[in-house]
Length: 331
Image (tube, rainbow, N blue to C red; front, side, top):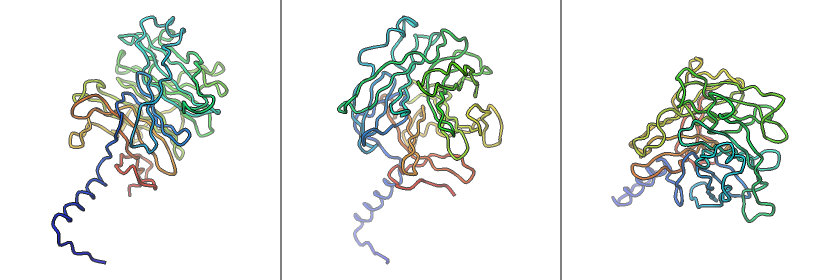
């Protein structure tokens, strides 16, 4: 069927709708966030936790409101004792595992010379649900106790067998050739450090941070950030990706080179995205929803949301359509 549009205004309107549908989605509501966790689902609602400890909630992934703060009572006593000059909660991440929500969080002093990662859990993220409440489980790792292992930006992940691991680290205080992103195996009952396997596996080096690992179709995909994170529209953060057949590496770029990566996302002035960082993925009904923070042209950092498209070789690319019921695929 061929339709002839005689009214110029109607033609313009249709054109604008088409442009809007293909353009990058703009989230609404209370979207302010830095170092957002992955998006997680609980009781039909979506939650994200950010640096500072506050949580946000959404019913549709697009409009966000403030929720409760798991750290409203302040830092745990063990953190205050370990790092007396701690500056609050950094870069938390959440995973639902063994029947409860496990929130891994970081704490640092002013110059990041003392850092640690802890764990707190709750059976639900819904503050109106029975049993809601956070219980701190203690420390996972700390740079106070381990030299040259910056203990921030914790991101738990499951391997191909459903075993729980943690990637973390930061190299901005160390040399460009030092291992800075590490993977450790976690205790499969408690989610804490595994006392039977205490090895730290270095998986990436250099001035990088904000690591995140996602398993898909036989590969572990390692995301991380380079550049500067926190300078508004002048931020130079960009997201890299490498992959491996093993959770512990080696991680390689598209050419199979170790200690190398491919750029996934960086500043896009035309789209109003500056310094994107801190990747997270929610896989739901065949679609991989990709969350991150970025700076608009003015103002503080906010939550960003896209979907991932996967090419024929199994590498992800950023897509714009976050409303599609089907996964985006690049030919």
